[in-house]
Image (cartoon, rainbow, N blue to C red; front, side, top):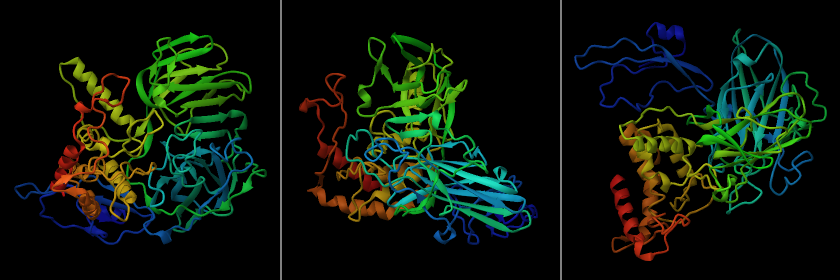
Length: 582
């Protein structure tokens, strides 16, 4: 393998950064880089060839490249900025629960032709980046979730084509995400980490070889008075189009009524480049049916249980309030059945500005649904009024299944939609109700099955890092990670996925690095759990035969103790399996 500092050098078959030479090794994946130390914000070019069993080399692969992030904390010159409090312009009840999206902007001048420019952005809880009025990239719900007290992820975005010589403007919208966690109604003790905040650095390389840097600092301005009046992943988004500010991310915008940002304390977690695939809108669905079970209450059937949101098309008077609610099933009378959502409001609200056709979709929420209730709509909707936007981690689909049995084919299709819909930068348990957590036990076996369908190695490698970040000094591992619900129940079934999933990644992908990175943490957990062994039996168990078949479909668990499998039996079997893996 050759790695070079330029295309021209690589074209001469010179690896001035790394020339691996001919490597005699039985593995072909996960080979560690061992060239010169890499530098921050650099582009490296590489190609590779192999030898066959007769000792004949292949042609060189086509040249490819990778770029590096900011590899050392000293490379960051930016400051954390934001407003660490509710302010005038926030949603009315923001001090207690809901919070409007902050909008931040700054103008700057570039004195040269831009050759390459890269933005490194950490916007917590969620962010969208704009340069000269243009949204950068197609990622949504960015960045990835994490144990914010231990680690926060930034994303790297190419802004070369958006910048120009002369005056420029950069803008960022900050959503709440899981960082600012208060909700209208919290179902359990949910951790919250602070008010939304931004760290941004744009490194600009000019054609003449000089450089410039644009950073988040005290020169930015901020407003909480924008159109996104409230946003929460569980409860939904409220958007008041009357508050839109056309041109807010363009140079020359009048921001005289915006306030200066505050330099704020950043999260305690270390900064790291997001290692897994971003979340994207991957598909758009058209409704298949529309009914009116009650006057003014319209129910759309998307024809598919999906995860994401809808795009609304509407015309009407200024101030008209349109409400969208979401559910997976209907009541017998054709209205929404939201019982399984528990406390999740799953409601989006759009307030019209009254200017011709208005097209809107939310940015900082998501729902699991098949049915959409539309109320407050001016006039009579039709099937073109909404579109379903399918949202999930943009993982490569690597496998498929089909057979002669229609039922098995449908079960497989259901599995694909269900698995994919729960990719939210961690593998979650559900996308619709007031939970949506990365429960470890839910993936102890599913991690193997889904690895035949999707390329999940980056996702699981990142998730195992979340697990280790949530591990306590004692060695205890939570039942879910990131541990937004701090459930540390000390059992072998749920936390055991910390060993089981890397074992599967090793078997499926030859991924040694995930095992190597967490092996010591795995041993700490095993040593911690040994305290619960008595005469070779694991006595500690919180779940047992979790969700075994109940007497009727209205129960989660059977109350018939004779049908229960001993938790000690299951816990001991799991611990034995985990020890063998270790």
